[in-house]
Structures are given as C-alpha cells and as structure tokens.
Image 1 (cartoon, rainbow, N blue to C red):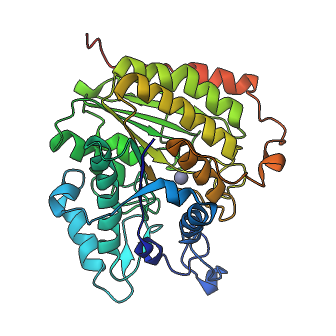
Image 2 (cartoon, rainbow, N blue to C red):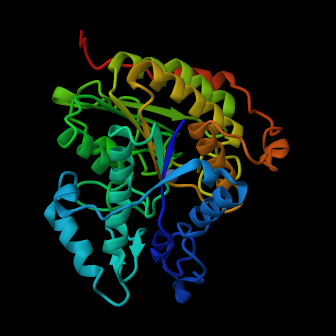
Image 3 (cartoon, rainbow, N blue to C red):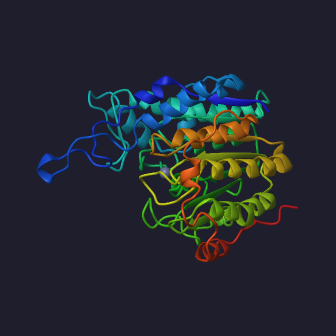
Length: 370
Ligand code: ZN
C-alpha cells in the first residue's frame, strides 16, 4: 500500500492560548490560566512518533496548500470567512464563533492550510498518486458549521475536501465516517440535504455539541436517509465500536456504494482521553481501520482519505494514530506500551445495553440506486 501523509509544522503554531482547558482564564471567577485543551501536543507528538517509529519512511509526504476562498465558500458563508480573516489580523487573534474556539494572529492562514491539507489528501488518493492518505491537520474541522466555527474548529476541513471531490473530480457519491467521539455536526450540516454525501457519525451519546447527533437526524429533502448517527453509551470500548462498525457502518456503506470514503479521525474515544468517556484502545482503532479498508477495497478501489480531528491525551493519541497509519500503510513498527493496561479495563467487550443502543441505529440505505 502507498499511503500519503499531510503535515506541516505550522499546524502546531495555531495558537489557542492559555485557556483553562475550555475557558479563558478569569481570576475573579477562579479560572486559572493553563493551556487550551486543544493544543499542539497531541498532534506534534503523533508526528514525532511517526518519525521515531520509522513508519514515516513508508509514507509519501503530500504537501498541504492553503484552501482557496472559493473552496472555503463551498461550505461556509462569506460572513464567517470574512470574520475569521479580520480577527486573524488582530495582535491577539479572535474566536471562530462559539467562545471555545480561539485562534491567534495569523490563524486564518493556518486554518486555510488545514482545510487545504485535507483537500490535498483527497486529491492524492483520487489522482492515484497514493492508495490512501492521512492528513494530520490542525485546527480540526468537523464541528464548524456554515456560519460559524465551534468546538475548536474554524473551517470544515472534511466538508471542504468532500466538496472538492464532488466539484472538481466529479464524484457522485462520497461517504464520510466520523469516529471522533463527538458528533460530526458540521459535516452533517454541510450535506444534510445533499443525496451525494452519506455522513455517518459514531459518537458518545450527547456530549458535544449538546443535543446533537440523535438517531432521528437522518437528513432532509433529497438528502433524507444520507445522514446516519450512532450515539454510543458512555463506557463503550473496542467491542461496541467494532459491533457498530459491523452491523451499522459497513452495511450502510455497502448500500450507498461510495466512490470515496473520507474519515474524520478523532482519537478522543480512546480509553485515556480527558474529554469523553469511551474506552477504545489502539488495537480498536487498528481493527476499525482494517474493517474500513476491507470495505473500501470492496466498494471503491480502497480509496480512503482521513483527516485528523480531536484527541486530547498527549501520551496516548500518538499510539492510536500510529496504529491507524500503520494499518493504512500495511506496516508494523512499535508496540503500544499502554495496551496491556487499557485493553484490560472492565467492559471492553460489547455490553448488552451498548448492543441495544447500536441496534436502534438503523442502517439506512438512502434510496434504491440500482
Ligand atoms: Zn472530538
């Protein structure tokens, strides 16, 4: 397998400041300055592990380039783009829209490079330069909605890349699998009425955004049936995620017959993540990737492009990302030293209440396309 890899050191310079996790410091309210939970560490350390493990020697570097305004405007409205651009000129930067998504001076250019990195990953796969690709971009994108950024996301990287595949490559059916632990609301919203794009989100039930990603959110109009949400109970581990993959995701992909699969790849469903309460291990992510590649080989010539989203444990995200990229590339390097611990957590196997929740998420073929 030839696997493309997008990264640029400047992604680590996207400045989310000295927030206390989520909120700006506020001494009178007792909020002490520290670091924003979405900081460079997880991404930078994943990149460094790729180098040190030797996996990098098996990857094909794909250069990111800034997404153009035309590309960004396929997803976002002009007011959002102009607002980010204007605040990006300020010495202390601004916020993408919800007060949780700060960026520093020059943040527009870095966010545009992240979106363009996802576009380049899709381009490399569709042009056949690589078999599959992983874009380790920052800031993330899957929460950004047409009119505003949110949840640490400035622009919808995956949505912009999918629109590129439709508009420039002329694809007619693209599927997005979002395994970030939070709901991929932005990507869903971008294509909610669009029958050309199937969005599937596996997420912890009702974490972020609040009240988003319910099973009844299935698309609208022409796009009815092309949104699929699988809210998982807190505490879901490898067993639940693989059961969801086998019983919901794979059948939905088979029914939709995508020409390309794009993955919004967050590692905040890991057992070590501070922002959610799932228990997935690096081997769980490896197995999800293996199943996805098998399905992609069957449906779309193995064409898979992944774009990085969340994941907030700086010591464990790198091993989850390494497992995914090893699988994409068909190479093994280092063992995950945490695995004996996290795989032994009680409840890793599918639990009855998890099975019930997953069974309730009906795999919906959008329509009869034959
Ligand atoms: Zn997330």
